[in-house]
Amino acid sequence: RYSGRNLAAAYSNRGAEWKAKGEFDKAIADYDAAIKADPSDPRTYNGRGLVRAARGEYGRAISDYDTALKLDPKYAAALNNRGLAHFKKGEVRRAIADYDAAIAIEPDAVRLNNRGNAYAAGRQYDRAIADFDAAVAHNPNYALALYNRGNAYFAKGDIERAVQSYDRAVALDPNLASAYLNRGVALEKSGELDRAIADYDRSVRLNPGNAAAFYNRGNAYLERREYDHAI
Image 1 (cartoon, rainbow, N blue to C red):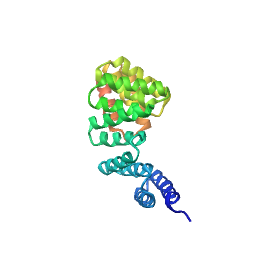
Image 2 (image 1 turned 30 degrees about the horizontal axis):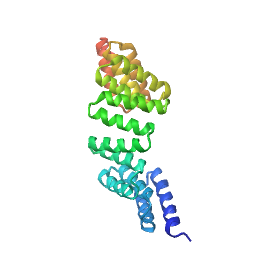
Image 3 (image 1 turned 180 degrees about the vertical axis):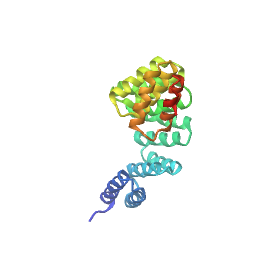
Image 4 (image 1 turned 45 degrees about the horizontal axis):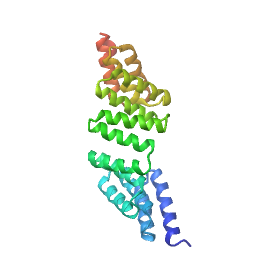
């Protein structure tokens, strides 16, 4: 029979499987049991924190990440995850501080992208773009970072570079509905209504529940005075 660390590992592994299936209560129960069997493993607290964050319990998730980091102050994944939880709570400065620490220990594309999103939320668009650039340098196929860079360029009013970033994002991920939507907005702003409508069409096909794509497409048809299509 399992005991101690082996028992904790078994519970923790099963907890991760429950989380992947969306069975959050069962996942928490297994992580609780893992912690009871071995309270010294920071990975278990990080795992439970991820489940709590998935349930929207960001404060409790942060508490778990705090415990993980007390056990291992250089646990980059826990720092990144705590940054995400702070970001979800609207605590942008705290999020950036955690991303800074995680990147200093172990830089990777996802963490750079996350920090870029935090900078963008704080309207520090140049710093955001620098992080998205760095994320793409780490992983040239990272469509989401290119999409986010497009959003930052658009927020700065640089429509041309925004469109270029969206172009690269959809080339890498043709199913990224939000990139078509936002590229459509950028193209509409630059007066390219035909291309904008084509992007809204693609966004609607990929995500029929996206009200913004329908709304923007209607506005584009109004600009072309095609009132029947706009309705």
